[in-house]
Amino acid sequence: MLRWTGPITVLLSLTVGQCAFAQSRMKITLLADTQVVQPGQPFTVAARLTIDPTFHVYWSNPGDSGRATHVRWHLPSGYSAGELQFPAPSRISLPGGLVNFGYEKEVVLMTTIRPPARIEDQPKLTADVDYLVCDENSCKPGEANELGLVLPSNDSERQVIESWKKQLPVPAEKCEDVVRVTPVTGGLDIQWRATPKAIECFPNLDESWQLEDCRVDTTGMNTRVLYRLLSGKVKSLSNSPKPLVLAYTLENGQRRAIELPMNPMPGNP
Image (tube, rainbow, N blue to C red; front, side, top):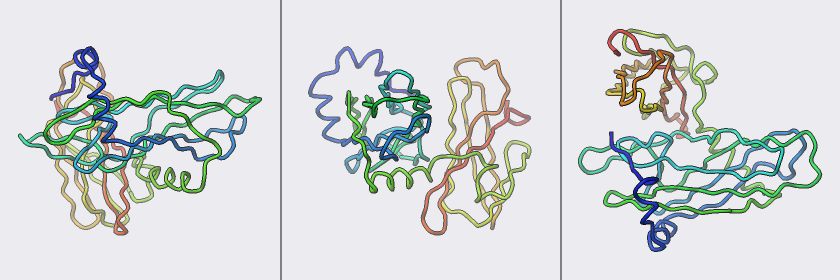
């Protein structure tokens, strides 16, 4: 599996021209779902990436090539930030049979912020965004530093966040679209409340494991997911379940995603 090796080889030779090129292919704005920060009340902040047509950026697992997008929030003392939340990606086919996992046109990457129990003033929140933007011919690294979040947010910002929250993967047992998930040899059976469309597999694995194959077969309101989970470059010391994201589209066109546990088992050495 190929990976972009930017942190080692690119940053030393990164030019102003490369950054300018990447920035010209991307518009980044910060959003929030709250008008006023309340003591002890979590709220959501987000980086909205608007991407030029024909270009794309990457999910947490970029696929056969690329590099994940990173957003780092700078917070006042006493505040804490949760993990970066990635909505369901898309499969992006490239020449040579490569497949990337990422986003075209737009994506909103969210983070939950937890304020302390006591605050005196409204906080100043800034973020750095580090990304790789690519088309089928080339890639350029880009970064935007110390972007400022403006509060209070407006209704439009909150609607954007709420819309993209619906595309975040949720555990299958908490998804209202799923009746049940049943383990079978080499995979899982899913029973749906309504037949989904355009079902896609996205493994969210580190180098300890590699998903060699993932097949999806849907008949009516039942889907069978068969996979082959192999040891990766780094030997894993754990046989605990590994995350698989299954993205799908509802009849109304809304995109959703569930998280499923992949277990090393007979047929999945």
